[in-house]
Amino acid sequence: VSYGGASEYAAIPYTQMLENLSNASRADRHEAVKQTQRFMSGSKKNNVIRNIYGSKDIYNTLKQLILETKDYIMMKLWAKDIMVLEPELVHAKKCGVELHLIVLGKYTGKELEYYNYEDVKETGEFRPVSAAFGNRIVFCGSISDRDGGTCFATENYCLKLPIHSTLLFDLELAELYRGDSGLLKEKFGDDVELLRKEYC
Image 1: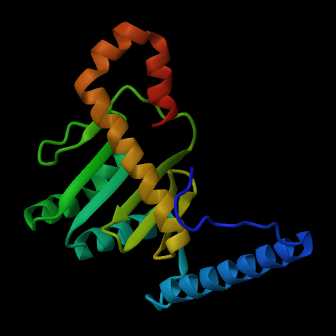
Image 2: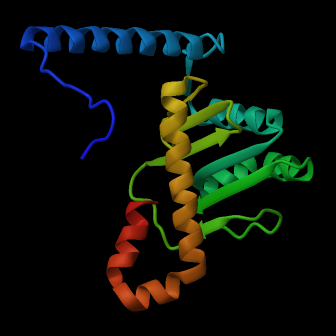
């Protein structure tokens, strides 16, 4: 029952409906382009992706980024690589930089707090490394003892989001295993070991 003036409805012609949808879609695309251009104009370096080759240049770039960062660093790397970067990371910690570190392989550093998967073994010649230096720059790639490896550093927003997200997921998983690894292994068995190694 409707009291007062009742609304009346009528179907519009099918061709009019298609035209309305087409106009709305064009408007949405135009707005998306405007928003993207506005976002990209926020940084002159936004689209630059810098490739770094060879372990010496990779380590030097990481050291420089560590020392330049003032707020936080999220990093996932192998034990033999963190040992090279340890002095810079310790310095950053003393300067008040928040460090969120995941170390793969056996590492016994005493001056840094970190999550450690010490039972994970290297399975090839390339050791992956990924890092986020605040919300400014992300770094990703692999280091190799044989050919040095290849990495990149960038402010490109298309790469910042997935690398940040992956690091946050890895940190959450590492925290979960630090607190409940025994319980989870007891409940799920070896599958938990495989899951942990898959996401390492």
